[in-house]
Length: 124
Image (cartoon, rainbow, N blue to C red; front, side, top):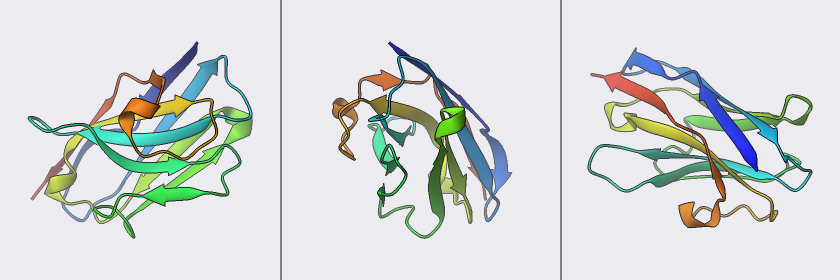
């Protein structure tokens, strides 16, 4: 089992920035792909960003491309999501997710492990 704990959420005004963190513990491994997803009230969970185990491959949802950067520090078993130029439509609960199979999938159902989520609220 892998446990994921997110932090860094909060409330900001439009145009502001936040940095989310997610630390993994338990049965972590070198092939762990990790990603960020979000879910707004009344909407399905959607992909935000993903990073390969070695950090060389990243992928972003079109809605956040150019405003968000995903990174990881394997020595700390932690990934980060730097979010800039935030918009009210970015308001959601942000979840960290992981799987052991190496591919940088963007579909929530492909991920085996999930954090509890952290709230991000962007006001206009």
